[in-house]
Length: 133
Image (cartoon, rainbow, N blue to C red):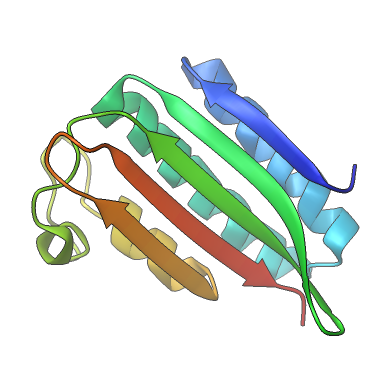
């Protein structure tokens, strides 16, 4: 299970597959049950965002190490319309869709490291990491 895994997101079934694979890798890395739940929730939100706002994308799942610590890194990429205002997009309650507007901001709170790159017509890449404690 170690190494790198990739899931192409084209349907809701793929979002479920991401959740299952992230849970398996999180267990392997040694994340606590609470941290497993946090990274699985973030993965689900980010994969669903790629599906809903960009008609799909790609999720890379990597086991990472920093000295004696192991962690799980997710890189969620899409070729959608991009996010014109990143600060606004990370505001709780802001949405361009029908959701609660907590996907990006909620995901940021659930992980240890969060990076968002996007722009109009440039797609979006969200990179998150959760470290085992």
